[in-house]
Length: 254
Image (cartoon, rainbow, N blue to C red; front, side, top):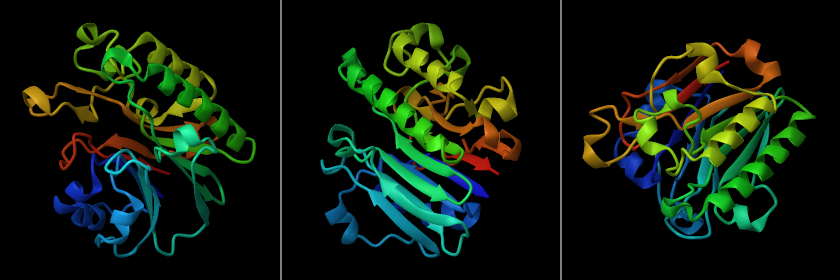
C-alpha cells in the first residue's frame, strides 16, 4: 500500500499546477491533503480531476482557511469508512482531522495548528495536540494507527536548516518540541527517521528569500505509526522535487 500526504496550501492552486498529473504518475492508494482552503459550498461548484478516486472532505467553517481531504483509490480493499473531527467544536470548525478506518489500521490525517508569530496560538495548539494524542491512543486500543500530516513542528535540530536562529520561533519552541517527544514516547515511530537514519532532508520552505532553491527548509511533515506497524513499513520518503506548494509531499509504503 502506498500512502502520500501533502500540505497543498490551497487545493485550487495546486490543481492548476498539475495535481491530476501527480496522481496519475505517483499512483497513491491513499492521498491525504492538508490546508485545502476550500469551503464545502465552493468545492461542490468546482470540478477537480480526481478520476479513479473517492473523495472525503473536511472543510473549515471559515472560507479559504485550513481544511483536510482524503482521496482513496476506487476499489481499494479493506476501507471501512472515513469520519471527520475530534468531537470538539473548537477544533472541528477548522477542519483539521480526518480518520480513515482500514480493516487492519486507522489512518489519521491531521493539519496541526500553527502557533503563529508572537506565539498567539501556542496554547490552542498545545491543547489540540493533547486532545489528538488522547484520541489516537484510544483508537490504538482497537487496532494500530498511522498519523500523518503537517505537524507544524521540527522535532530536532537536524530537522531544520538553521536551528540556532529559530529557537523559540513558531514550530521550534521548547513546548512544541517537548510535545513531539511526548508523542513519540507514547509509542509512535517517526517513519522517516526509522528508515533514513540521520539523513538531512526538508519538507517545507518559506516563500521568502528564495529559501527552497537554497534548501533552507524544515522537516515538519510526518508519517508516524504505532510500534506494531513498524515491521510493515517498506519505505518512508520526502518527494522534495515535487513543486506546487511550499510543502513537499511525503510518502509511506507498507
